[in-house]
Image 1 (cartoon, one colour):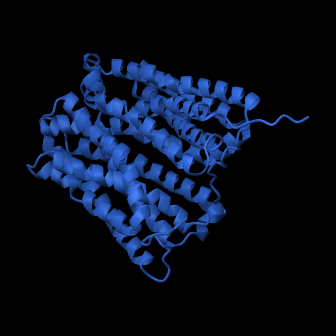
Image 2 (cartoon, helix red, strand yellow):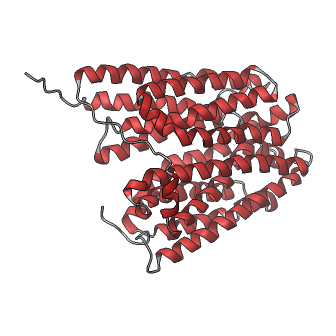
Image 3 (tube, helix red, strand yellow):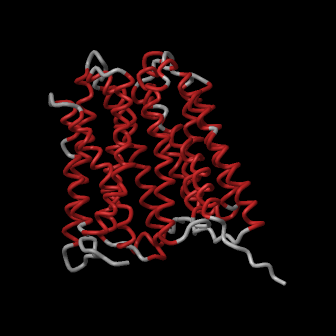
Length: 422
């Protein structure tokens, strides 16, 4: 007689979600552990801003290559082993980065992080489909992302809750390693809980991982490519700025490390709270291309306000926070309206690859611009060139947001501007 197995209990499933998300928390904390020590790397190790930018730039460079193969690899070895392996790589990467003051050793640690972190995100996202279905799945993804972003939030606030460790560059990185052990903990716990569930419950199948198919690139239309360009310009303007933001607030605006970290965390906090709300708003009113254009308008003056105006820092930071919440909330789901279901994997993989290439380039370019301009506490005007570079990216993003809206209002539109019942 065949045994009929029940579905996992809700408590079991949501416990799995929270515990496996610990791996994402650690992953995000490790990545964002560089910004709070940027000035210490410069003053104590003699690093240039180009060197500091390279620590995040090299992560994106490694991520580009691993993302091409990660979907195939995860499908081959399975999600629970993938989460354990890539989570372990992330923790090792944090330790390697903290061990030595040699730039190349630290860069190697960040390469390891790029190799581990991006496939870890893919594997966890893939695994969630085994445990959640339908509307529950979207909410589960939201909880997972919120817990992950708490890692970035905790890193930005680390000078506040761990200020005694910021007398040198190394101790904060050891803290990142200790916190990053949650990558391994999350992997081990998930491995055990899934193994146990397979014996007792009926589990769903993991979702298919996003795979990159070269032949599909030539089948995408103009609206998709407009969103891709908006994506790369937007993230290239935001994430490299975050790399240097704490150092910038300290040197150009006289903030102490604690306040500078809190200001940098405002973007993460805004995205945790407002991104789901903007997504709901788009579902209610449509106007997706118009909302992305509005977000692009908001970001356009932000960086120049930070260096040329005497207004409160909170004004441009709030503007950037709204844009950082609004554009991703609309942009990523919009791709599903533009691309056939069978090519979504390629579409999302391509967007992510190009996004990482942009972040790779502009982390380096922003550091280089700070160096050639002599940006420092003694010369805060040296940050102006970098802010102009970021503003030009904002203008390009606005241009392609406008072209997207124009295309969607024409006969070849895909419905981004209307309310669609799905």
